[in-house]
Image (cartoon, rainbow, N blue to C red):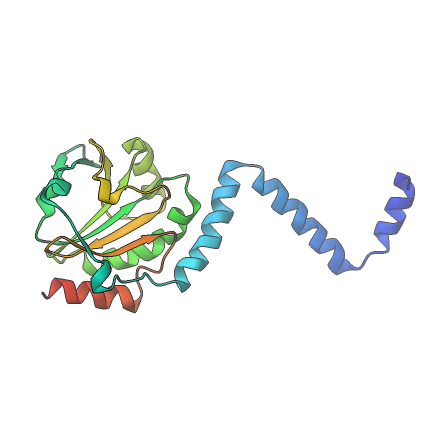
Length: 203
């Protein structure tokens, strides 16, 4: 089929078909750029994060942190060094993330909502840890108006927290029990998470 015949045939297509063609072309062009892929992936995972609640461990599956697992050096956004052991005795919400990770980006609005609810409670600590340079991470969260605390890891994270995928999130009791270990975008601001955190805070 030559170009002229193709054009004539295309003119006969319905308006809806032409619109869907344009949308498809725009989608392909967007997906060709890293920022576009992150945006689309983040949107898809944001929908997932609205729907899927975290899974709370049953008693037989709960792992308790060893004393050695608390020996982990971190640095906050103000370049101040802290040790994971500093938060022993608190409920800990620990999340590993990266700026290039669509599921991480997708669940961040839910994490922010959860942080907003508990940020003034001294019995819980939020730790969002990335291996990227802090200026890059800080710029990323500031542009999106997130206020949860972010950290970089100065030493290798304890084996119990290591994962082949991100985001991976842990909710840890005051006595060091890992109550939640969740991989992928999740609804962190939902009732299930809040009920668990309230229960752990009040223990």
